[in-house]
Length: 640
Image (tube, rainbow, N blue to C red):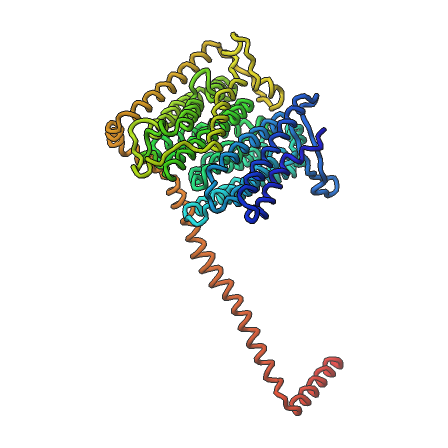
């Protein structure tokens, strides 16, 4: 039974239409029922489809609705497929998306655009499901552009604020740069293989010469598209500014939907990427560089959401590093665990922001654990998970596996492990700096605000508790062999994806078990030491913190200014484009050339019309002379 697959994306679309058209008139209770309800129903269908898929012999379900484009033998159907990759993704999108919808009931309850917000959220879920369920690159691209549109609408939800409007435009424009790469790559694939069906493309990938210029160009262009959606160097600058949207939007974009679209594209096209070793090296290097760069910036940010935003960029870099060394299964495993703990962290941050009257500066928080115990301890669970606290939390299993593959994969390199391990230490440090400044130490909350601080309503705390549970148990499906084999615990995520992704055509390098254990111990001890140092420094001794900041003032200025990359882009890209647009395209081309040409045509036409008008003066004798003269000229032409 696969005739219900179309309902998985259709139900959130229905919620968008109902809330968008009728929500304002039918009231908040109606919107509250329809918005989360349609996503919840989609989650139930996703679970059913997933269970049916894993129980089928082909490990795949397909439903074709109709032919969208048909030109001769070229056919693009509207068809949906649930396989091991899309099946896991729809569970993440609808599961985490449903929890965010429920959370939004409490967080957005007093907002004027309540119905509009839920309509946008539903539309976002629809396009993300369309992206992962579509069988062709063309249908995937519709979802790809759709989530870009919804990110613009949601980031700019508070459109009356200039910062929100600018952030929305920035996200939209930067993503269009990546989309250019996606479009050109799709055209090259179509012209060479004659198809846009992703299963056919993967099956025919060997038609390209290994390491050839064409396959390298195609995969680099696809990766350019992924760098836009998944915020990698050089197109990561839109994601931190996306914090201008409501906090549930940050959780939805950063955890389960838009930013993981680029990783989905690489994983889905794995057969193409393993044929391009140069591209794989670029993916790994860019991922490692992005992970480190974003982690260093997060060290000194004071806005609680901005710390988490740069953390997302850094974690996405980890995932791309895994993809670049051919560890597609491990990269997708970290997508799953990251969805749990990052959604938890953003929603926890939203709970704090709401409690302190929309204050986001951590320097104006502190000692909130007594008044907000559920938010505090669920947030600590998320911080432990992302920091890689050993043997218990989800982030440890997926992150350690990425580090090991970066070292041991035939496409890996010890330097990638070093960068990844340093980034893991930095992650633990900035996360427990955030925990210490927000929930522990002395209270720095405005006294008038502090007396009103209280725990969030159940609609917000229940999703936090569910996500905290997932942030703990979510990693147990991927226990590394070095830990699982002595306890007879299989690596279930590896077994689940066995044979699904393409493998590198390079002979694997054997490494001793002791090497893996040693590297695991080094990175884990480094993370634990960073957690302890950050907590002790920022929870008890603010004077020492200020002294350290003063001593490292130049470095602090560089990191706090985000390496001044936005300013660099402003001077090298934006301002030159503005200057060319104004002084060349407008003043020279538009005003002096186009307007001049239009004016010349108008003046000439007017002059000619004036000259002709003189002949129409109403004097009959002149008309008779004209007729006679015309007759003479005609006769002369005919005779001579």
